Length: 216
Image (tube, rainbow, N blue to C red; front, side, top):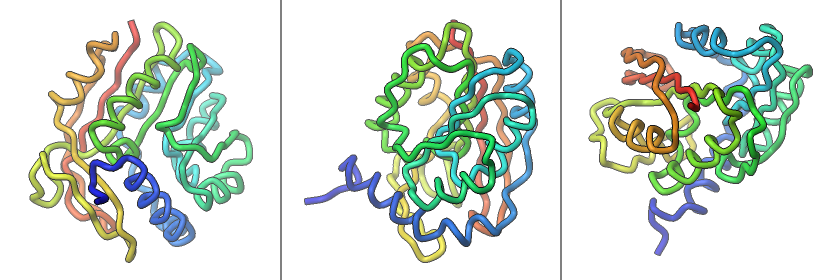
């Protein structure tokens, strides 16, 4: 029996959803740029090499990172998203791969994840966190933005299937304590944390939690 604890099922469900929604999503407003994005960038050396996890269409963040003079590798599980990203941000490199399959060692000055890791169940999340830390150089910076303990009233501990433009998609909020319990033992130091309630036409009301970590 397939359940929401089935890693392959979750990844394929989300790949299909983003492939189907990619063209429509690309035409929409890509959201406000929040303050911790600039904090993340300010922590990076000139010309830093950045891995953008779940880069989507490359907008807005891969493009903004390129404009700041950084080198960017954007990855995404969605074929259609990657095809669009290559057109939107030709200066960056893009690769079709799940963030769960990255296998880099001490390669990146910074790793960026905006609303991508919430599409991983706890097992995949913890495995991917280990790979993120392994991919950072010492002193490397990690930006993480995702939903906190509730999304439109859904309890934290529930695995959630949401509807996005007629497509089923897995999503799960993570509490601040859950995030700290995963990353602090891996050698990450929390530099900044912000909570903000945001509302959008696509996603409704969300509790947005944003973190900036450093590998010490």
